[in-house]
Image (cartoon, rainbow, N blue to C red; front, top):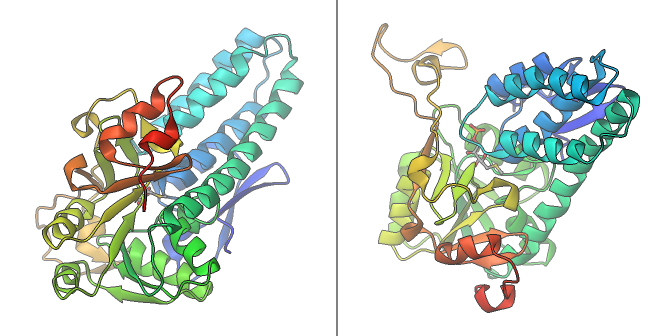
Length: 353
Ligand code: MRU
């Protein structure tokens, strides 16, 4: 399985996904500003992966601090947090990484600056390790809903590349394959920047998982023909009511699935569920530059000067979602908020196959 990001020799090494699949190039980021640049420019992308990059960026930023006392250290981290938070607004994972760091440090007042710096490197590596474990658990829960012989459609890339490894939406796919189920994957190409074509098709082929690439426009026709058994996608931020923000085009796919009676699942690690917001309407939607729409790999394909709208994400209302696959089990969207309650009987609300 391909390595997305790692902490190595005091630097953050990330695979430059903007060049895939034509070139496999790793970039070494020596400071947090380069990590932030990499997130903005999609060298690294996918909600969990940018959460890990943020945790590593914070650790890098901390190494440069000159402060000797705790207050000075925390103050010094503020610009690091703010720079990382300003990169991409939709995925909640950067915020999640910042809050996790603040929580960790709040209990460590007694440590020296050198100890705090070492702690943040350890924490960033923990975030990466935990992410892979979470994805494997999501995989095991989700694979129960995939039958031998099924064809699964996915949108964008919620695979190894979008995470520390194994993937969220590809988690159940990989687990089903490991269980010996013979399945097929349909990958939407995912305009404008083609994560389905460049990344999902590539990583599944690397791992010998049968994949067929389609244009985004073809999904409806295949669903109507009965050639697809279920959909599994990832999420950048899921609200407490089960509304899901994910790559632009997810909403259209979900509506088409509902219309054709095909179950639509969202793989959502708890780190991408924002229990502080009650509905998807509160999720900030990133709009990116026009060149992603007017150009493909640097080649101009639109009339010069045309007006462009480039929404990077959309929100799929909970009513289109069959189940949300988390590391705690698979839940109906209307039960999701219960995961944030104390003493909840998870078994009572888990979806059964
Ligand atoms: O713009 P991107 O490539 O960062 O968008 C990624 C997605 O929409 C993914 O589906 C989502 O982040 C989940 S990744 C496990």
